[in-house]
Amino acid sequence: MPKILSTHTLHPRASAMLTGAGELAVASGLDADTLATEARNADIIIVRAPLPSVLFEGATKLRAAIRHGAGLDMIPMEAATAAGVLVANVPAVNARSVAEHVMFAALALSRRFRMVDRDLRTKGWLAGREHANSNSELAGKTIGIVGLGAVGQAVGHIAAHGFDLNVVATTRSMRPAPDKVGFLSIDALVEQSDIIILCCPLTPETRGLISRERIGRMKPDALLINVSRGPVIDDDALIEALKKGRIGGAALDVFSTQPLPPGHPYFSFDNVIVTPHMAGITEQSMMRMGVGAAGEALLVLANRLPVNLRNPEVVEHYRRRFPADA
Ligand SMILES: NC(=O)c1ccc[n+]([C@@H]2O[C@H](COP(=O)([O-])OP(=O)(O)OC[C@H]3O[C@@H](n4cnc5c(N)ncnc54)[C@H](O)[C@@H]3O)[C@@H](O)[C@H]2O)c1
Ligand SMILES: O=C(O)[C@H](O)COP(=O)(O)O
Image (cartoon, rainbow, N blue to C red):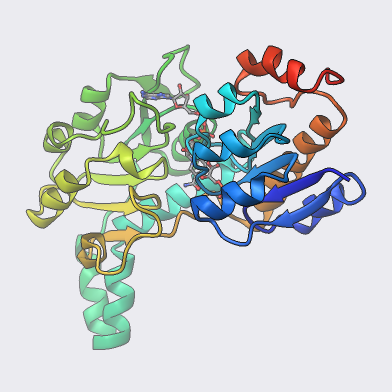
């Protein structure tokens, strides 16, 4: 029976799909050594935690690494490809969940939800209400989307049609813009946006994209929302800007170090919302991501290629490793 190792427990519907096709096990730890050791016996690994490159050197049976979700940064692509391992992801199926989280964050920051809730509980009704005078509506403001893929387009749609926001975006391909979206360069976008949404992948080009210089160009009351990956932002520069009151606030779902260590400066700001990398996690998206990942695993076990193969250059090498495969 083929072995499927998953870094995390899958949605019951996803595990049910794999019953009979493979023996499903959940990794007993997420550290590099444990993952590398347990992957040695696996035919397929389903990935929700960063994999070490070394895992691919010792995993001689491994056919595929399948991302449960969109972001491929958790899989060292070069090491996987060099080892002849197929890499796939499950794109777009959590985009609606992420977009709803983004709108929740924009509303929570604009309505100072953290401070209102805290002060109402600890200081009473009037203290909570005091914040409201400087609260703001979203309508008529400009939302700037960095990365107009599945998440960015879902955010743009809700923002334009549900909240009457003006939508501008910057994206790698700058293909014809969807309805109600105007394209800008990244520098113009950070200067002109009231709310900046980061939803691009982490790549060599996007690492540090929100630099000290770009944070310096933001409006003094700009809100920065990151659902991409932590290293897209220069943390030192953002922390300094928050300390000096140089921007209005931030909502951060992803961090350069995860889990965010206790006592991290981001915990200290009233105008910063922190969430534990959960923008894309809802009951609905967990089912869709799990089912999508299980579907890709079933294709590989049936000697076919995954639908969302992300390293097509591996196929020749893969076919040499598993000659019976498609
Ligand atoms: N926080 C979460 O729970 C969560 C959930 C889903 C996705 N994500 C993150 O969001 C990313 C995007 O997800 P998606 O489903 O929209 O992916 P996607 O592939 O559909 O879209 C990514 C978009 O980013 C654009 N892009 C790439 N490089 C860029 C650059 N240098 N500047 C501007 N735009 C650039 C691409 O052109 C594309 O339009 C994922 O890679 C992942 O890192 C996080
Ligand atoms: O990249 C993604 O789609 C998100 O980070 C969610 O991924 P997860 O299913 O591994 O939490």
